[in-house]
Image (cartoon, rainbow, N blue to C red; front, side, top):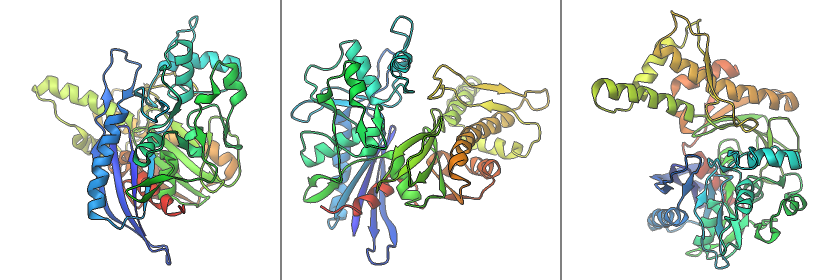
Length: 439
């Protein structure tokens, strides 16, 4: 069986054509494509992160049609994409707003008597929510009277792409996508409607959650499955249903994830719905791999000031890091440059600077170690309930392309790090999951 998986990322859109022998279970990647998302909307508000839904759907249909020309015997199309963010749709199923992405910070603005909406919601409900979660964004719009008049429902970008491909006029969300919006009971698979209603939300705008109904419809006669959350799709592609395999993902953000057959509550760790009634325990950093990108931008700006040319610095940074990685006198870098989900106001720091270690190489290694240690500390919380992981699998370009970071992770996690089988993990996982669902 052949399937195409589509991953709608924040910066890129990836597709993977996967073939699976349904008798032996063997899988292979036949083809893959990655295109730039290029749908960002520039605004004057530094806290606002928006994208154009129609531009995204257009780029996906064009690339998908090209692949279907090459692989006309494709039997499934699987979807996944960036979680948490929302857009509004009208009764005809068309977007009436931009996509407010997971990076959007309107929930952190002190707009309500000097407090942010996240703080207000914590006081009123006791729930620890983060700016960027779809229903936090929606409640902000309610309070500011900014919900589009034509809005009939809301959904994630993966759901909207699925609607566009199949002609659906109403969203149907996998439980993983629903949970990513916030105000969701993972154990029950439903929104916290009573709380939302008390906060002023019209419950009719909430999308339907799939109940074993995993096919959205068809595109050119091919069944299209409900969109998995990107974390869940990456996990499925890299780990499958292995309960003692820790997934270390380093992309734009960063996560450590482990499967659990039972629902667990761990402070500082999210319990997210997975597939087949199971869950994944997730520790997520807001900065993740972006911390290394921030550092590269720092070196790039200095290089431009020095030479008059702005050039990428990643190659030189890796060289300097290798020269320094074994040093005993290390920087201690906290890479929470964008805060944490629990404390969005906290910022990063650099400690243990001396006259001997104040070098670019030590700074680079310090940032890489800070990225890894932030996730390792989250793993410690997971491990306290599940026990040690038997193995560690790594995914995401942030670690796949950075051998110094792989080395550092091996040292910090005290495990060999096995790279996931496909570099487009989420698209690969979405394709594999689509084969599990019968039309």
